[in-house]
Length: 95
Image (cartoon, rainbow, N blue to C red; front, side, top):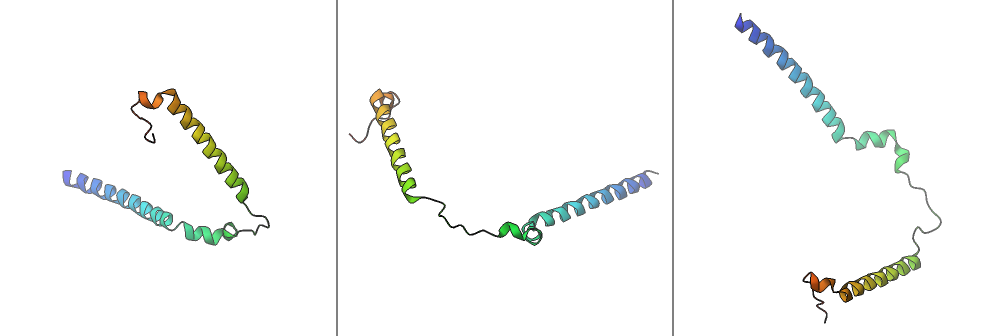
């Protein structure tokens, strides 16, 4: 009697585990190759339209960079003159 119960439990646990492993294997394979079906189903997502105007203005970028450097220097000067660096063990090493 006990042997029949264990055979029954073993059979159904094995079948349920195998179904679970098959599902995990199939979904894992589909996930590993997700780019290929996306390319087949949505080829328009990979096309890029040509633009007439440049995306970046070099002069504006240079001006923004200069302004950020000015702001950084102003903040650094204020921090050093306030005594914050000396209080926290960071002396001005430039002299």
